Length: 160
Image 1 (tube, rainbow, N blue to C red):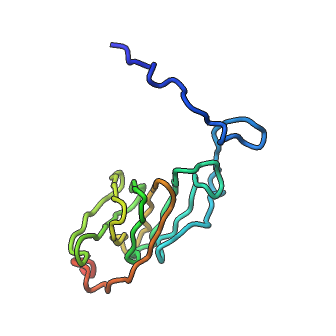
Image 2 (spheres, rainbow, N blue to C red; image 1 turned 135 degrees about the vertical axis):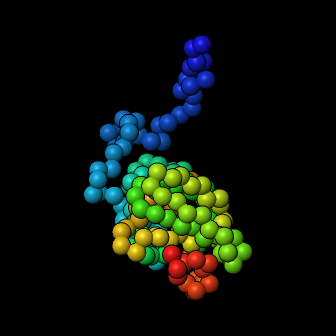
């Protein structure tokens, strides 16, 4: 059975995305030219490839997050933003829940959805190798850092 492509017809006005030349076209951010001027959580270093800061995007942030070996972020949430993540390389842990008693572990190839306003801590489980995530948020890279919790209060963190 052939798919019904009629529902994919262009409707609406995309003229707000016109480039200075007047053309509506894809915008490429070249590797090495990502925007480093974005919110971070301590040693969770975020760079944006697609954001309002350097592309016509208005409802999307898409970037790369790197955590150094053995690093864990400060406690934070992403406000109203829905967050999607993909573990590009390394092994990750996300603490969440009341007193951060719960956690999920992930490895290369795993995807994660973090709901809006969910306080969490992102961790690199590996003490020798970096962790790299690809992350997207809508509407923007909102980062609200909170009062941190001590390492010893995070179940299984010190003995990982």
